[in-house]
Length: 144
Image: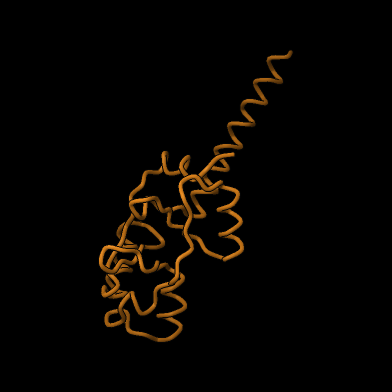
């Protein structure tokens, strides 16, 4: 059964983060610039939350807050659901579905070791299924 480490090996372990005092406007600009849907929020070098596009919609736009004066720490999601590199992908998929989340920070002994997204899970599944189909096709056609 594949684990989170299989995805992080392909994707890399880069984690985009910012401090809780940063404005929502700057966070949104960073997310747009990096073409990502969420960032880890830190305080004193430790993760205290996650800020996502969903937070912008629900806690900034819907509440008519000013993104230039609202800090990410005021509207981030906390506490954060996390996993480890040896967590099975099926377990991650179940947690993400049940909690209705799209980003899952990966922790190891030194802290945040990567971010797993629902898109990463889908891409891995598609690649895995394509490999299985190719293998079965070659098996079937080799029998002829």
